[in-house]
Image 1: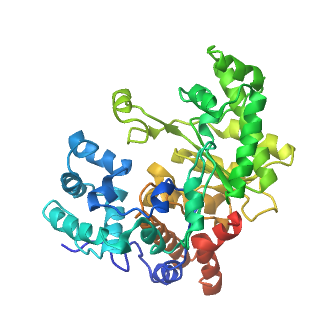
Image 2: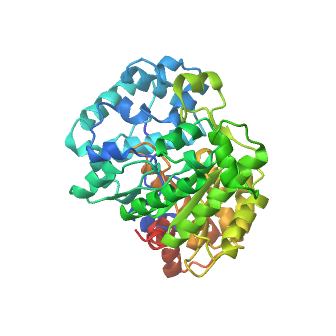
Image 3: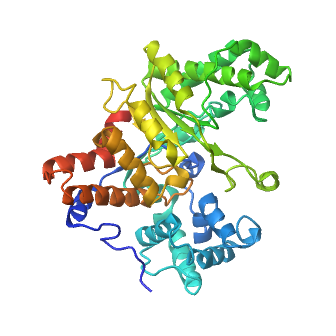
Length: 455
């Protein structure tokens, strides 16, 4: 049976198809992802299709578990061929799940597979793709380069040496691979990772911590970093003595909720000011409940498919945080993401209160993220931004992925974007001004990000 992926996939009108012709070949700026820079540095070659598709993809793991597949075939000791067969078996039933679209976009784009993946053809597709993966053309670098990617921003801890970024820069790889600063372990004083991290950093006081972080910001900046990223379980805003709270934590004393909030608030304000000095963009991701399943967390660790959407109440505290920075003329370019789609309008209206002439769309509503990285989620984010902001200023899609073939998600996004705008045009909600529409589509697909981040 033929796959659903064809030239007109998700494009329901004449205008949508015309707009997609503009968008489809635009370069990609992947300003937020979780690719391993070591694999890029050594130009890793995947041994087989199972490793490429299932080696670290918790989206696929969740789907397989939901179909009742034993963990042995998900993260256990089954062979990758057995795991891929189990995945293919489950995928047939995943109607409505974006994984169905992503998988077939990946098979079509990278391997020329036109068949719908199922249990019956899984072995044949596995062998065909595995043979290709073992050639030089399918190395990690070539997968990126052949996806028309210009810039990749990985996600890196302040303590990282960035040695692999240096190796990549010193090589002949044409794609810029830049670090992004992710200081969560220093911020999240309430988590079990905090004390071991502070010990590893070798700081003994809060002032030493801030001094060390400032030096690491300078180091990252020298390596081309222009973005930070904060993954927050909640948005704090409480004033207090962060230095004293830091000392209490180091002494093993229990902290109150107010003390945790006060420490995090103080450090986030510090970071915002430091980013503004350097012309960086600050990303704030909020709204996940992580590691819900304690038994499986102890067995597999984090980022293995046991996270969910939180019931967030972020508007008031986020407003205060942004306002504190704005009052001091220290609010950096900022992208706001919530995993809970009910927050789209909260964020889209809040960001309108803090825009500035330093950059077009200085404060951004982040693209549909994680559980919202699907057709409905993307459309709702685009509509919220269209209703309450300036959609034409949007910096567009990112992968937020550990997979080297997830760049098809940019194609997925561009099809959804063109179809939505095509509908608006054909329904008389915007004139069919081809020159203006081309500017909007080119901007959202590539040019806005290129200007906004200044890589």
